[in-house]
Image (cartoon, rainbow, N blue to C red; front, side, top):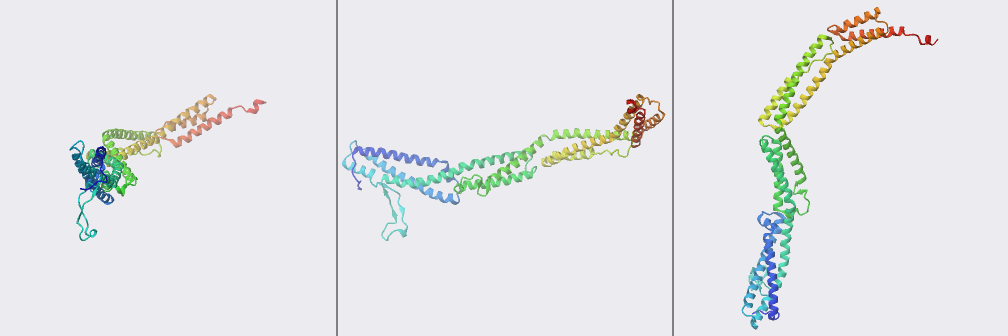
Length: 424
């Protein structure tokens, strides 16, 4: 029988057994925790490549060693418990065996092959290691550090990067749902293609994170392999904004069409009214500068029909572009028509202004005692005839009124006493 360094007493044996039981329970708890660790489960369940595959292969061997050492440790404790339970006061041979179990190299590890190049001609092909319980624990420590370092490093990368990938994935899913509500990929092909490209790059990043997390341990969340996360976010925002905009376009389509229809009806009416107004002005004023009426309602209404058709087909990209352009053009046509109407009305307003000016200067002449002046009356009559004639030659009327105005001013100046004579 193998011997222990020394024979322990009963109390020492009991104390050592309590300590080794506690140590064994700690090893078991640690290994069980490692088994259920999320990082360990992901490493075991994934298809690993690169640095992670290399280090996890070493980690698997370390785990095998740890469980093998625990099994050997447990086998020694089982024998010690059985032996100690025989009697309250062990006999000398029992004390010697218990001492060997607890202090000596009592743990037998699984036999392993010895490569032919590492053994002599008469050496056995299998090698059986024997360690004490203390040596078992010491032999387990490097393997434990090695495997937990790999597991924690991989888990740290997943904990850091997976939420980022999930956030982008959620954004893509939301945008895809929006595209679906707009009618599917054919309805918004540009956005659908951009979104597909974003998803391809996201999946490439996710594959790298899952398969080789140890290659991404630098702590830089901005790049995952060749994938720039900031670019993904920016492109996804553009697509999402476009989808939201088109969703609003779709939701407000009937409202905008109704408003545009009313605006076109009003424009159509105003064009007709302006044509009638122009004809009226031309019967009253002889002026070649009266502008033509810009007629846009009919062509704009045709475009309105095209936009309505696009909406019926669910082509919201073109609807957005065409409807906005049509709205701007309708507003522009309304403004141009209003400006044209102002130019058409200007000659009548100028004629009425001249009529008022003529009457004002006639009253001025009357107050100055020149109401019966034949020269002034003749000028007045000529101007009045010109201004109240239809059509009125406005340019000629302006000159006639100015001539009468000047004559009234001159006549009243002649009648005004000389300042120097009054002082004398």
